[in-house]
Length: 345
Image 1 (cartoon, helix red, strand yellow):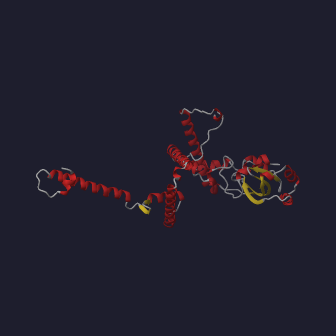
Image 2 (image 1 turned 120 degrees about the vertical axis):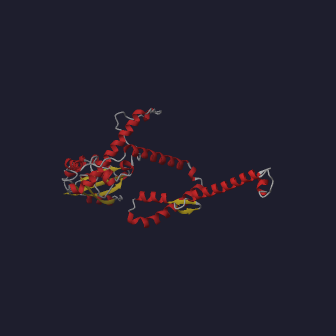
Image 3 (image 1 turned 90 degrees about the vertical axis):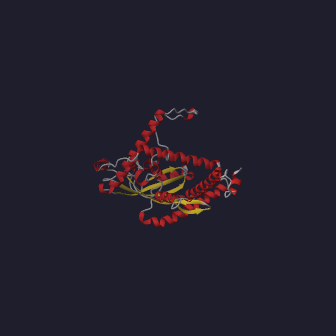
């Protein structure tokens, strides 16, 4: 007798069917409860904030976005509504992309693999390095006293720039700039020869330019010109003013503290990478790619712990002068000034 027949005749009085009938009934109830349980799990009671074509947007996703955005407690209600819309839009775009098989595009898959690799590497270093101990007030003060050029004797440079295409930096223009007595004379020459240029005003200090460049700038008379070539552009720069801009220990303490923490994080991360390299078997199949054994080990971009590399505040943790907390001055590309020594006249 098959189960369908048993289910259809559950009320019969045949003495050979009661056990089978009972089993069938229990199986049916268990299957029903299991289905209900699965649906309950899918719906995630209390966790789902919205449903987009059947796909849930959850509280966990929203909390992750709030944390990444650094939203304060006072702004969370308003920000939550905005970020929920962002998550909904992201889900819609993801679904639309999947319909066009963009998730199978080789470039997209490669980008996903790279992101996954960076996240895992970052998580490992974060676990190994952990949270570096906060520097003591004595350590902060010691750093402050050892670097007066960044703090107590800090100087601020106000500079003017003319920015042109690097292709326009001809020998003729260089010669004209050499004989020019001011930046305005260079501007007149550029106008005469119909060369396009832009103007910038730059403020930098001895805390955020290399020491060699700082000493050059401090020794320059007011209005002295120098040329920097940086990638696709070139800049004629003149120092308009140099003035004292000291920073007290009280003002600098937080910045120094964060800088010391980030520097220690990077040192620990570099040491861990060195340890892993020393125990690994690395074989270069292309011998031309073998690195110089004298070269210092470097952290791959984005591979450090969150506090050390990936999300380090560039204003406080990425020293421009290699051992100084960076200045928060606004202006042109600092990298151009960092490499400006070679372009000094």
